[in-house]
Image (cartoon, rainbow, N blue to C red; front, side):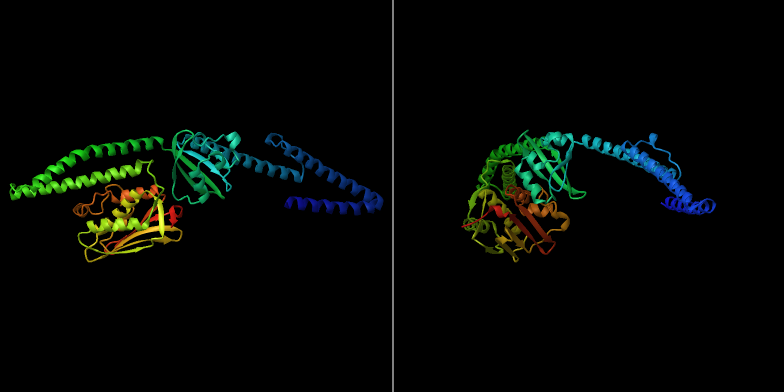
Length: 430
């Protein structure tokens, strides 16, 4: 820009100088003709190089870039440097993009990039196969028009992508785990993983646990029966009575463990269970109170705060097992003199069943794991209290099957609060 200004300045300076010089030597008419001729040549020169630049822009190439004259030498030199750097950056960007595409194609997971309107921008071959995407036809189309799965569409529309979802793709009998993440400017990345093999292995494991538990149940019932018979006999000496009594307790514990394993297996694997039964809160709480009174040998101070107008749809047996497991847990870990509160009602739009105790509490480091199978905060105390280590795992799975969740808050020596939260879709009022 500086060169252009100086060039223009010196041109007009020379024009003025030439005018006065020729006017002094000849006359003003000749001076005017001379400067007009010089100006025309100057402008024609610039127009020529503008034409050459315009022609080069139509087909840019470093080999045919004009050299120029005067100020145009610097202009074309700058264009040359800028174009060379731009071409180098473009090559690097293309190489990086090629590497990214190669890496994305090598992944076992499917990847789909979508915009703020959920329109497909790009997808790798794995995603195209899993979600039936045809890149030639489906790019720039909303993904929910291409992959028509109700669970996925609801997940996408809710825009809460903290957790992934597991769905069954009926078109190719695949089980998929799908996760959405926000990135860039209002864009999203959909990743999908084929979990069919994992699901099949899980089903085999569940079937094995169920069959194994069934097979154990019969001989254990026979053993328990013989032990009860032996306990009733008066011919046994004191030491033998102690041994038989100990065996009976362990047999009873094994029986409870097998029952919990069977219950957990049924909850996890049974798709045929009717989870749309109308559950009357009044009747369920009445049944709970009877069961709790039989279990609570220490006679805790148990208070009920129940809104009987709030009822839910679900599996009556599964919901009852979740509630009783939660209450018996509180009884096991709360001293006789302490209070347990059982409440049921509506919180915002959800229905919440809560059990609050003032027992021993749980350290925060255990809270993320206590719903795992057989996880125990205190091994010795859990066994002494008669727990199997499966209660909270059963509750978690029951809630998952009812689209709900379990929330746990606890502090050591300050008690615990367990909430079972049911979505508004499962609530009905009489």
